[in-house]
Image 1 (cartoon, rainbow, N blue to C red):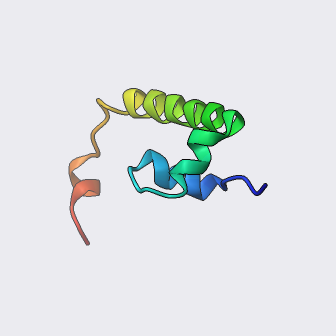
Image 2 (cartoon, rainbow, N blue to C red):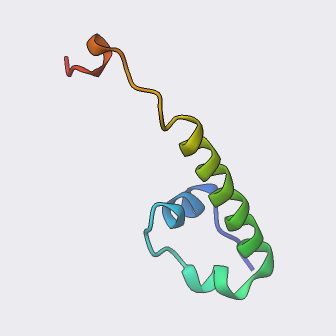
Image 3 (spheres, rainbow, N blue to C red):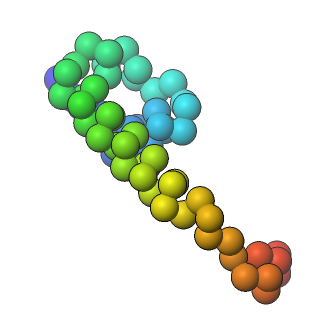
Length: 60
Protein backbone atom coordinates (compact mmCIF):
# COMPACT_ATOMS: atom_id res chain seq x y z
CA UNK A 1 0.00 0.00 0.00
CA UNK A 2 1.24 3.47 -0.87
CA UNK A 3 1.20 5.88 2.05
CA UNK A 4 0.53 9.59 1.92
CA UNK A 5 3.33 12.00 1.11
CA UNK A 6 4.32 14.90 3.34
CA UNK A 7 2.55 17.23 0.92
CA UNK A 8 -0.68 15.23 1.19
CA UNK A 9 -0.46 15.34 4.99
CA UNK A 10 0.00 19.11 4.75
CA UNK A 11 -3.13 19.31 2.60
CA UNK A 12 -5.05 17.37 5.25
CA UNK A 13 -3.79 19.67 8.00
CA UNK A 14 -4.94 22.67 5.95
CA UNK A 15 -8.40 21.14 5.63
CA UNK A 16 -8.22 19.74 2.12
CA UNK A 17 -9.83 16.30 1.72
CA UNK A 18 -6.98 14.23 0.28
CA UNK A 19 -7.34 10.46 0.62
CA UNK A 20 -8.82 10.87 4.09
CA UNK A 21 -10.19 7.33 3.96
CA UNK A 22 -6.62 6.05 3.81
CA UNK A 23 -5.77 7.88 7.04
CA UNK A 24 -8.89 6.57 8.76
CA UNK A 25 -8.02 2.99 7.82
CA UNK A 26 -4.27 3.01 8.56
CA UNK A 27 -3.05 3.36 12.15
CA UNK A 28 0.45 4.38 11.00
CA UNK A 29 -0.97 7.22 8.94
CA UNK A 30 -3.34 8.34 11.70
CA UNK A 31 -0.39 8.49 14.09
CA UNK A 32 1.75 10.35 11.56
CA UNK A 33 -1.06 12.85 10.92
CA UNK A 34 -1.50 13.38 14.67
CA UNK A 35 2.23 14.08 15.02
CA UNK A 36 2.16 16.55 12.14
CA UNK A 37 -0.95 18.29 13.54
CA UNK A 38 0.70 18.59 16.96
CA UNK A 39 3.84 20.07 15.40
CA UNK A 40 1.79 22.53 13.32
CA UNK A 41 -0.06 23.58 16.46
CA UNK A 42 3.16 24.13 18.42
CA UNK A 43 4.68 26.16 15.58
CA UNK A 44 1.52 28.24 15.24
CA UNK A 45 1.48 28.91 18.99
CA UNK A 46 5.18 29.82 19.04
CA UNK A 47 4.74 32.43 16.32
CA UNK A 48 1.29 33.71 17.36
CA UNK A 49 2.60 36.89 18.97
CA UNK A 50 5.27 37.71 16.39
CA UNK A 51 4.37 40.54 14.04
CA UNK A 52 6.46 41.77 11.10
CA UNK A 53 8.04 45.17 11.34
CA UNK A 54 6.23 47.98 9.58
CA UNK A 55 8.43 48.01 6.47
CA UNK A 56 8.39 44.24 6.13
CA UNK A 57 4.60 44.00 6.29
CA UNK A 58 4.01 46.39 3.40
CA UNK A 59 3.67 45.00 -0.12
CA UNK A 60 6.40 46.01 -2.60
